Length: 199
Image (cartoon, rainbow, N blue to C red; front, side, top):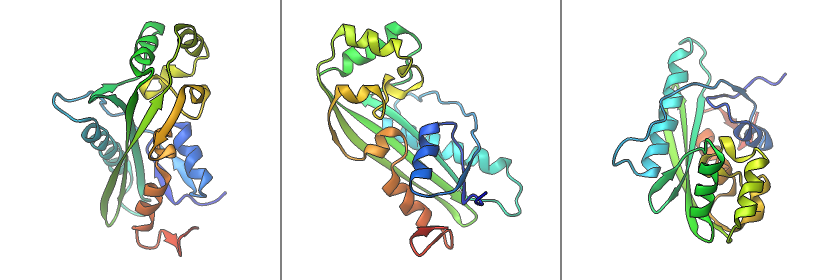
């Protein structure tokens, strides 16, 4: 088995899949943090705080000797500054999609990397436009089971792709891990990425 380059502080199978896509060997080590939004916190500030907190939480659990870098991320969907969480019911899912239908919203993803030399982080914001979605489609989508654990109630890489007419920004960022920016963070850690290629 390939030795991991980083520890991924996330239970998201999509983030793990994206890292594998670009050849970054990793070990999944999810952590639990309080994801409550703080009054007055902008969406980009919110995801950055959570990503950094996840990284610090896992880092604190590791033995001091031989710690691997810790990578963490957090994603949120926002419309006019309002954060959309994960729908807990059909009614919540339909209400979210009804708000997003026919409009352009923002997806903010923060990536944080903690290593022996310090901490670095980036926030990537993308704009996603959805076509008009019918109520029947909203009900069908909830019945697929896909939206229940997704920020904003949809998965761009899943069935919800049929609702999306345009993306401006990072497609992988909308999925939950902006690969270009994540790679740049990894390259910033001395000796981690050799010659621009994952070991």
